[in-house]
Length: 303
Image (cartoon, rainbow, N blue to C red; front, side, top):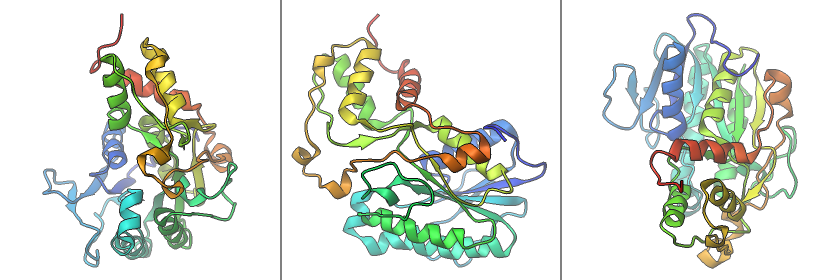
């Protein structure tokens, strides 16, 4: 199977976390492909396919729609600092709610796919494969390891770990473009790394795994290698036609961050994904290019 393969006829998709960036993009793409789709929301529902659900409260009464056959658990407290500041509250969303929902869905015969993170490998200094023991050093990573164990213990349960997913309206990178476009310097971190993938590429992979009935266990999707935030800024400057001297790097420590919140290595191996679906690791520059294309109409680029 390749990216973009269709869902089996009549198989519907439930997205738990339609308010999230990835969840919303999945809904739009499922609609475009004609896949029956429902989603949960913390906001007042404006569509009869939207189901109210707030994972801060125990989801004991939530029931999936009749047509759903696959569930993608997107919703999470993914802010690293928030997980460090209030781990108990974060665990109610990232672990406890996953346990309740995943077991209920599995008992009803639905396949469950959990979105996870490269933060489960943060302590590693090398690229890690799917079978490598997790080694998280922050609370978010530890909670995702627990959630992964819950889902992979279920029949047909699958996990997709993702590196940085670069959305078209990323606030940090958009501010870089605005500053450089205005002739002002920017100060990205030279010692914080990312292995970005575009939002569109991540959604393609998620839907491909969701459509693959035999997909089970842990998969990873990552750029082929890491790039520092400073190098990413320089790349955007070159592609945008701005003077690279406007990029004036600094250390994450200058911003008061700790290594727990600033991974030194984020790229992961994608061997299982490649073997199962024929999906390889894109270059990090592909995500940056996709971001620039999406932002080109909103930012004044030099002619």
